[in-house]
Length: 306
Ligand code: PSU
Ligand code: MN
Image: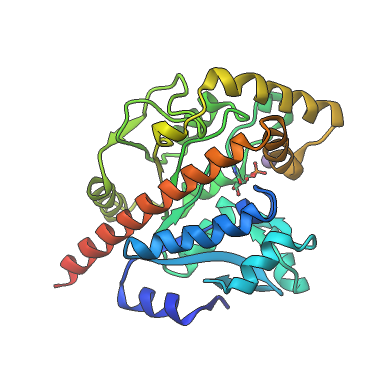
């Protein structure tokens, strides 16, 4: 049922490195036209580092692994594209609609397509106030049951970072911080929370992936790679912006699936685009890191088969 591009299908079949990319970040995570420029550039970075990019989305009811330039343009600009988490996939497919896949839905489709590494910006998680709203992203559920390694820059402090880390622990999901002893918070290299587990470099990540699945863990892994120092926005600067965005969310009574896209858009407005520049920089960095992990993982799998 998945439609592969030839490039992605051949790479998966041959066991060559492939990196999945999500599409909610394009349709509902960044403004046009920076979103389509980012999506195109990131695919290039993955190729430069020796892997094949497979951006994932549902277009005209068809789940796709690997998209054309026209597909990316549509996702970036067509207002009929809906945010698609796992539970939305069946009806989008049944109706022949367009869906931009979240981390959860992208993981699910990447796994079906045989892709083990997935690059994004930030994960969903436990929202602040979840004790009354019950707003906990399905990204966490999917991480607990789908064997894909998700490379991100941590989670934004629009979420309750502590509760998100506790939930991931309960779900048995390894949370590896690459090259740092502190868990990163997307725009900032720190978060006030220590790294649950530390790794250094793509080879160690690839070995942890192999070990996790050899052990029979059914879960994915989170690899949190901090934003480069030069691109970081200090937490002290982001905190008031995030507080304002959360207050605006409350004032407008927005909740559920619209909460995260609203907050992301509001933060870009409140920082006059500075947050967008940081967001694009960290996705670029994650693309390089993810490609290197996919290359190392493919090499390890190749050695096993010799
Ligand atoms: N966090 C970000 N940028 C994003 C998202 C989250 O910093 O673009 C997107 C991802 O697609 C993620 C989704 O899977 O939002 C989570 O939405 P929700 O909180 O509704 O589960
Ligand atoms: Mn939610």
